[in-house]
Image (cartoon, rainbow, N blue to C red; front, side, top):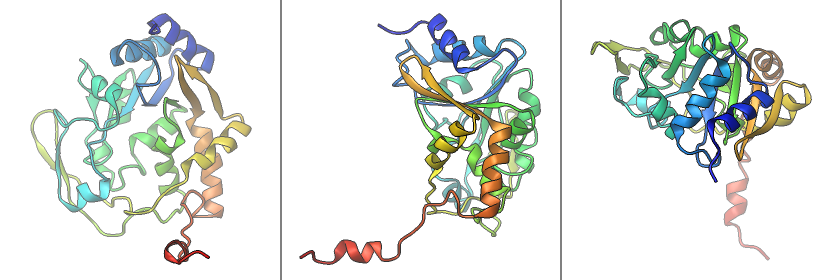
Length: 263
């Protein structure tokens, strides 16, 4: 039996989603056990009400570095979201707008959507100063992870990028976007460094222990609701003390050991 909208709204409310929330949602549809992706979107918008704002990642496929290096042109009118079926369904709905970023474009609908998305094409670091991620933090918004974990919490890129982590290239790249009016816009970009694995799940016990992450379920999916502003303050402070705090440590001897004969 699939869950209906009323059940999903109830679960969201129990988790802590409230009317008027600015809500950034990362999602995995399969484990929710809803009828369809549109049902999940409707439940989210019912939970935040007419004064709320729903935001989702709407990134094109491929790493930001590879897209930037290739000088990719991303047409926000029709380029598919590679962030799951819920985000792809959302971006095509009436009234949903998409930010002008070739690597980390965001989709939003609601009261503060225009404010959150505006000027993304002017951000030389797509998850940096002036980006939708910063605006959601400044608005004391919430991050909701449904059917996925903090390993998909892109706001942690922002936290790293603005608190001293060595995560961004120092060389300019020049991808472009095509806006909703068909105009091509060059977006000079410092993309994320390639080949730098993160350990974002490390923040789970930290945020939960500090009371900044509420864990529960939406449908059958594991869910996490995070205070974006407080997460930035807490994890940002930890990164300032250790710039590699969320970067997986590389053992240069591991590869050698892996090919040595065993006794």
